[in-house]
Length: 107
Image (cartoon, rainbow, N blue to C red; front, side, top):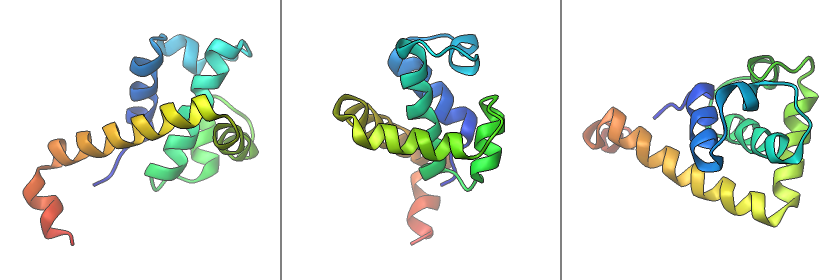
């Protein structure tokens, strides 16, 4: 059950109702950077991607951006709630996409 960085980004976009160019852009507006942090934290937990790969995907120069995002999400209750909701949704999506039978066989 592998989730991609792009799937984490897309789930975040849908949840927060923001456009791809907004979440991928350099904006520091709270309405945009908060969801970007959530997407980066999801990608860190749910993919096998390195922090450098995740940071580059989101147009950041440094892998520490990912660790900062994880710290910020875990520190903010409203983002943590959104994070948990999307984490569960992505897990269900992956099970449906990959088929429940294959997921059961992986145990």
